[in-house]
Amino acid sequence: MEEKQKISEKLDDALRVVVQSSSQNSSKGNAVREWFKANFDVEGRVSLVNEKKQAYNRPKEQLSKRDVDDIIFIVLDTDTVGVLVRKTVDISYPALKTILIFLYEKKNQKFSPLVLYKNGESTVANFIEEMNPSLEVHDFTPPKENSAISDGSPSYSDLVTFDEEGPVEEPKISEDDAVLQQVQALLKDGYAGIIFTGAPGTSKSWYARQIGLRLTKGRMNDLYFVQFHPGYQYEDFIESYIPTQDGGFVLSKKTFLRACETATSKPHSKVVVVIDELTRTDVVRVFGEALTYLETSKRDFEFQLASGRFFRIPKNLIVICTMNPWDRGVDELDLAFERRFAKIAFDPNVDLLREMMRGSLLDARMKGSLEKFFFIVSRHSNPLCRIGHAYFERVTDIASLHRLWDNQLRFHFERIFRNEPDEYKRIQEVWSRIFDSHSE
Image (cartoon, rainbow, N blue to C red; front, side, top):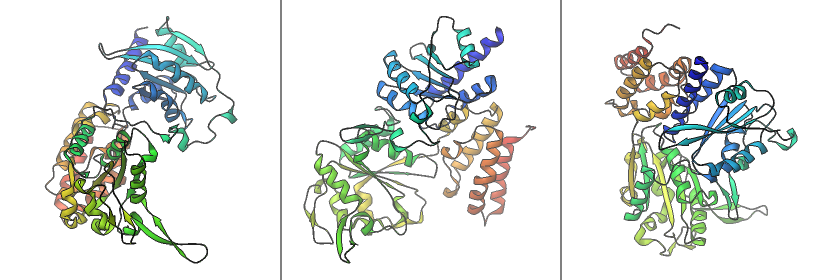
């Protein structure tokens, strides 16, 4: 019984990683997956449900791949449970053996199993029942195969809900998120938009999407995404003439004008344009005459486009951009454009790296050595050497750590230090010290 109590305590520790980790940490569920594998040799997954409306999407997010035997949901209030169970059972499949729901009490940081649903015999279910004799237990029967999700990947409709205005996706950041509050304060100050700037792997693009979802209240039809690249032009972003089947041409509105029209039609809602890799093309050429009217003091002023048509940029249109400050195109970024935008720096974050590694199988010494490597390269005098925490999100054990170097990081540093072999050797040695005293 003592051994089983230790297994139960390890589950609590793994669940605590989930609730205490940042929403950016995509590896926070690794400890729970390892708990399932190490103790019962099954595939399991965990999901945190912060509020009732998330209960409609979380089951689809976690079960659409149909690749787990057991699923755990952590809820913060009991009102969530009814919807969560119903949605999970509706999309369950024969291989899914248990649905286990824990209540997390923030005040005393305690996990309490609320309800267990089981599909036939399950070693996991037997263990949970034995450790929690008063637990409410129910049987469930998965729907027929032809009524469930038929392939191995989630479809668009599996990941979102729908309202009268179209699809709605739940943001993964809360209303009190520090970056969101900073963005809102800067927009209130009167900036035309925000630029997220930082080294690769610092979560700029992830945050741009999540901030966009928060500002639009999850309405996907009010959120527009583009990625700039060397071939991207005014004709891709503003408007262009396109050929018709009868041999003529018709003037077509592109992403920015369509976003403006959506914002004009919804004056009391926010519409967001997210521009990824801002400095990969000539920004002034892409925006054209619209650049002047991004200025908040010139919003709703009528101006003439290259085609001759007149247009306005509404006040409720928000532009969020991402860029790497060390891209060659940064030096060419127009000062008039920069003046209209505020910048938020995204730096390599050792705390987020630490959170990612909490769910891994690396021992404490290796984690410490990895943090030292990360600290050295993230503050290197050569800015191109700096990498973000997101590079490490796939690390779960020693083998995956080796693969990260052999199949990605090695090439990154070889390119940067191709004319500085001694510096490359130094970085390589710091990396190798992560594995010192480890015998595989």
